[in-house]
Structure formats: structure tokens, C-alpha cells
Length: 60
Image (cartoon, rainbow, N blue to C red; front, side):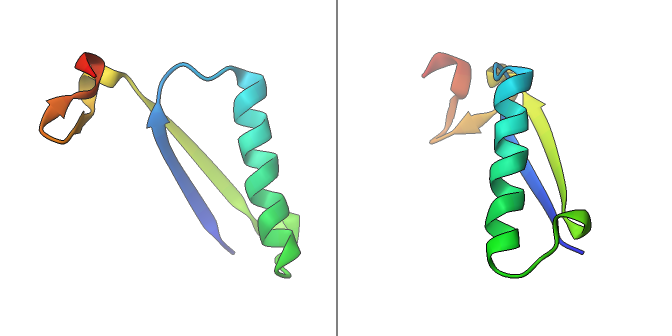
């Protein structure tokens, strides 16, 4: 049973999150994993809690 974790900045709508879940599930179905075996976990982070290239993402 694959578990796919998506960690991203906050701000996506519920509809966009649903599209992400459906898209990931479809990719796994395409390689033979039944949808009922796939779990997708989305975790949202505020940009102020994320750093990249030594800079707080909210300042990029």
C-alpha cells in the first residue's frame, strides 16, 4: 500500500487539493496500483515556517 506525502506551502483550495490527490492516485493506477490501496497525505505549511536557500520562504 503506497503512502504518498505531499508537503507544500499553504494556500491551495480544497478543490486543488482534491485534484492533487486524484492526480497522484491516477499515476499510481497507471503503474498497476489499485486506487483503494493508495493513501495521499497533504500537509500545508505557512511560508513563515519554511526555509529555502537560507531564507524564510515568506520573504521570497
